[in-house]
Length: 409
Image 1 (spheres, rainbow, N blue to C red):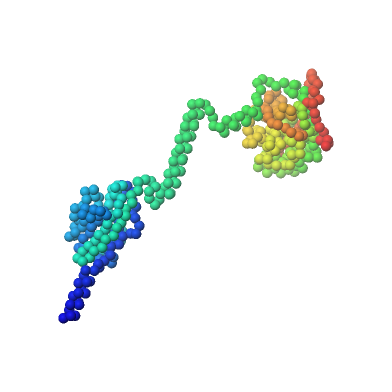
Image 2: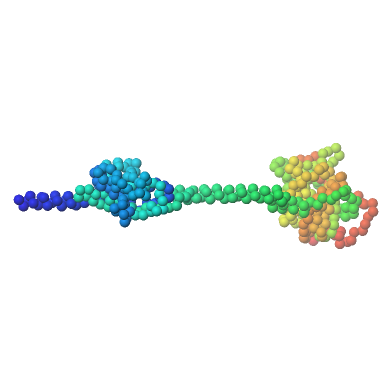
């Protein structure tokens, strides 16, 4: 008899003990306004929950549940959650109520939906409850896991659109005001400063009043150049093999005269009888001692070089930084050069056409010598001419005709 009583007490104790556990995620569930969210909740160990009572409610509204499942069907729910709350699968692998999945689905979320939601499951002598926290964020482009990449993408897109709008407004302003971009203005200002066109013909006789005799310094002649006995005619040697890649800037010849003040003029012949004018040549001045052959990028005024260059099909250019291209028509056959040390001017003239071509403005210091380069491949050499004496000679002040011999210290 005693044994029977013990068995009954044990059975009663087992039946009144909780026989399952409700499980929910440990972290809050986040969703944004207007979206649909599932609040996971399941029974462990799994068992069929179709015969159990399932109640989802907010922390202080037990008697006003969001979802209430009993007797195998959903009962009435809160008015504010009607038509947007239901039991749902927490994953694609879930078996639903038959596997103890009692998850809650909420649709069309609002900020007012943020709260703590209780998931309670009960049956005959079975009961457990857990809480799931729901956090609501504002709907936006960057609210999900792809937020950082989306933010970067749209930031770049916005910057590009702003830049495009700015460009359109700038072009519109330019069209209305006639103002050009700053880079174009700087280029035109440089060209305007370097090139000073003269209206009407040039009096070559007046220029020749400042003529000086120029010869080429044989001691500093490039080995691939050939020089005449009188040191006035120079050209590329027959053995020189030009690669054909750009102008041969290394083929430089330097004047034997040094200038430290005054105004000096000389002329250079760029064509022979029955021969087309030279396509390649370089004529100007260089600071004394800067005789190392270098490429075009190093031959700038800041490095002590000032010249006009004819680079065949590439046209004419001045060695400013960046270079300024010019259109000289017709191609000069005889070039006049006027160097004014004190005024800081280097001017070029088409002697045949009695036309001023351009003037380079700069500041000179130390000794400056004439600079020549005959290029490569032309039939005609480069020849320094003896200027004819002007019909009416005018004495030039000694200070303005200072010429130093290359033999001076």
